[in-house]
Length: 114
Length: 282
Image (cartoon, rainbow over all chains, first blue to last red; front, side):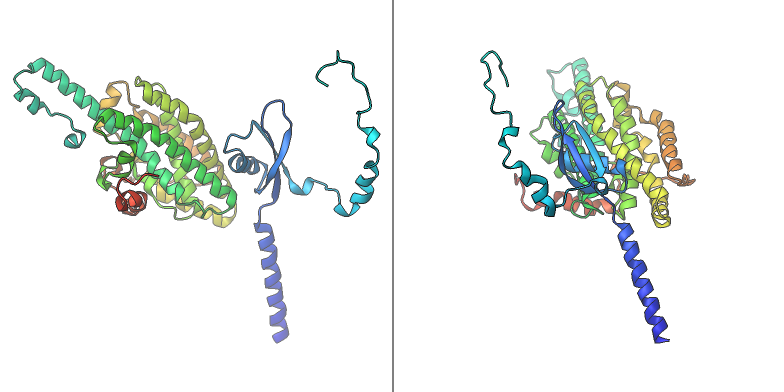
C-alpha cells in the first residue's frame, strides 16, 4: 500500500515538473537595427509564446526609447554557439598571423577614405 | 462648475449698465462655448487618465517582465496624451489652474470618465478585456477627432492615433491568445468580457457638452461609432472563439460623474501625494 502511494506521489511530482517546464515561454534572442544602413545588432533576450509575441515584447522591452527601425527575433534554441572549451583550437591559430590584416600596403594619397 | 471656472453668468452681465444686451448675449454665448469645450476636453482626457492609472497599477505586478513593461508603456502613452488635453483645458479656463490641478485635484463627482476604464485589474483577462473594449472605441474616436475644427484637438488626435493603433493590436492579440489558449484562460477571458460588457454602451452616450461640441463641429458624434464598434469587437471575439454577450442591460453614469465603487479607491491612490503634500512638485 505504502509503495503504491509513494510511486503515485512520484508520478504526480514528475507530471507537475513537466507542467512547470511547459508553462515557461521559450527564450528568444532580439536583434535591433538602430538606423537604416546599419546592421542588426544583438540587444538581448526575452520570453514569448511565439514569434509574433516575441516581436511585440521586443518592441516594448528594447525599443521604447526610440532605439530602432527594425527588429529580428529568433528562438534561442535555433542558435548554435561555439563551445568556449574549444577556443584554443578555434581562435588561437589566428593570433600570430598579423599579415592577415591588410596593413602592409602603401596607400597612394589619391586613394581617400580607406 | 460655472463659479469654479470664474465665468460670468448672464444675469451678472445684464446688471452692468455699460454692457448692451446684444454684447452680453454674445459674451454669454462665448462663455457657454468655453465651458462646454472645457467639459468636452475633460470627457476625453479623464478616460485616458483613469485607464492609465489602472494600467500603472500593474507596474511591477504584471504576469511576466515583458507584459509588465508593455502595460506600463500603454499607461505612459495614455498619460502623455492626457497631458496635452489638460494643458489645453487649463488654457481654456485661464484661471491659473495648471494641468496638474485639473488632473489631480478634482473630486470624484467632477471626473467624467466612462465606467469601463475605472474597473479594477481583477485578473489579467480583465485588464486586457477592459483595454480591448476601450481601445476599439478609442481608435474609432480619435480617427474622427482628427477631423475636428478645433486645431488643438485635431493635432492631439493625429499624434495619439499611432499609439492607440498599437494598443488595439496588443489588446486584441491577448484576447485571441487567452480565448484560444487553455480551457482556463478561455473561461477567464469569457468571464471578463461578460462582466465588462455592461459598461460598453455608455461609450456612446452623450453629455450636454458633447452635444454642444458636435454642433460646433469640434466634437465627435459618438452615437455614429456604435455599429462599427460592436462589429469590430465581434470580429475579434469570434476569432478568439469567445461568445458575444447577449445581455442588453447596461450601466451608465460616469459621464455625469456618477461612478462605480472602485473609483474612490483609485482616486485615493492617484491623488494621495497632492492631497498629503499640497503643491508638491517633482
